[in-house]
Image 1: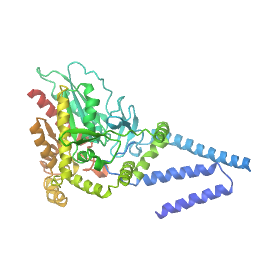
Image 2: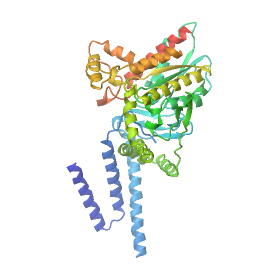
Image 3: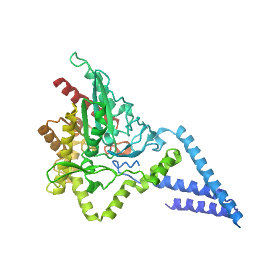
Image 4: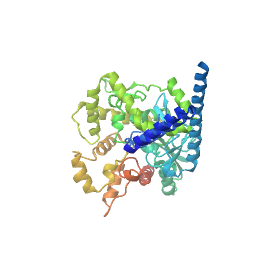
Length: 56
Length: 410
């Protein structure tokens, strides 16, 4: 968990740097990667009952 | 000022689109190179249907890795089965297996699922006499989450169109009782039956179609983007959308306390607990009436119904002493074969053949001197969950033997 927040801090610093450098196009690129990364990491570690298959 | 804002906005939009395109391409490349054990589940969805409530989407091509592994291709009618012709070939005995996720069998390759194993067994072992010189076709009609009411409606609406000689209805004691009752299922996208004052079955709720504009837009994007398909799995895991539907319905209908009580009652009912509860008695009565009505309607179409009681790993995959002395005592279960006994008696009374898989599997495992064969589960979950290849193989042979016996008796 500590590691995870450390990595989030790095990502935050990166976005701050891009903001300062006015690299507007690169900010959403990093944000999107970060978003999908978090979804995949959190989603993989959450258990789901073996007979509950929600496929909609 | 306005021009600067437009320029910044365009750059941000460009960056967003670029990121999505890069991710989409990366995932497509990765999916064609990754080894099977690293592939995520994608490309498999259910859809809302007017009669049965929900079913798999036709002509899907995806990967299942939530439990077990298979490359899934649904047929043009939305079943996880090979392409089938409505017209039965000449000199062929057709068997339809109808059930829930155990019959849908996403966890194993189609060629190793119960339907194919049964067909192969019958062709090999039941086709060698002058009195019975027929080919066999075993069709699978399974959808995860289905209860007996959905199976009944699917049989009337679709299965009988294939003109099967036998219909094997798979009853899973683990959740089929619950799946039949709206008060505990609380899923408005499914059909439900109830018993009226005259003791007759009637369709009390037709399924709500899930065709909102929001869903239409989501499906449009999902069907075209691997990225959306891949992240959909973790999103489902995080938010467990089915549970959300239930939670939403509970908050709307203000039945929280009653719901919790009924859930506890019904969860024990398949083990013979809470039998003095009117709700449990009603649940069993509804399920048995549904089974009887299904059998009668099948008979009126010149076909015959068999019931298969699906096994539970907690019982059949472990040593006898452990099951009786530790597990059953810990769970306060007096009769681990309560459902089997009840449905077998129901079958005897109504002249419906019943195949109890738990009895066959436990007899096999408890007759061994050392260890047990695990028929359920995968990886570190062996003994729990759906049938693995061992399970499908065992069940396919058992079903083949039973059907062959019936054919020779006739």
